[in-house]
Amino acid sequence: MNNKRLKPVFLTIMFLGLTGCGFYSMAGSIPPHIRSIAIPLVINQTAEYGVEENITDAFQNKFTEENILQVVPEKNADSILKGTIVKITDTPYTFNRQEEVTEYRYTVTMEIEWIDVTTDKVLLKKRFSGWGAYGLTSDISTDQVDNDGDGLIDGDDPDEFGEPRSFAQKTAVKKIAEDVLNDLLTSW
Image 1 (cartoon, one colour):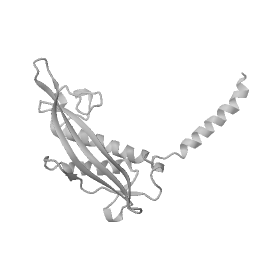
Image 2 (image 1 turned 120 degrees about the vertical axis):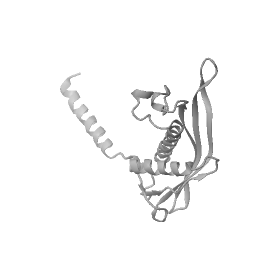
Image 3 (image 1 turned 30 degrees about the horizontal axis):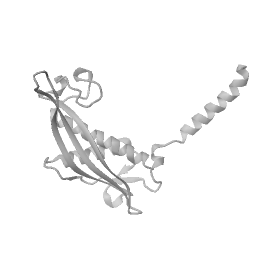
């Protein structure tokens, strides 16, 4: 086929592709009247003290960072994201040849409910779970464990530092927040 004949077809396809992508928006999958979200303190049904503040902060930070919906106080919100921590496990995950624990997995399980304030309708109700790993050393930057599951360990992973169990908790919550945000965007 002749290049002169292909050029107009190619340009038409490129134009349609570019203009189509220009109008695409992740927020477009959320009901149009919902522009804001309130994220009140999550409820903690576990014996793990103080985790509800960390999880609430992580959710608020993730939604603020992504800037899909404006995070506002409950009285000003178009929607509310309610969370309940239903289970936390901290269990041995890997062992060495002597059958000694070398890595633990910290897992958080939550029930999430996203409510449309205008219609008083539940838009999403689902259980989410996230985990983080940690070794037995006091410094996760030298523990030879992929603490956040990104395929990098220690010196190759610039965000692996801090107290091991706390980092595992942050990683678990970050995974849940990302999954919740993805589900909110794809549920519609």
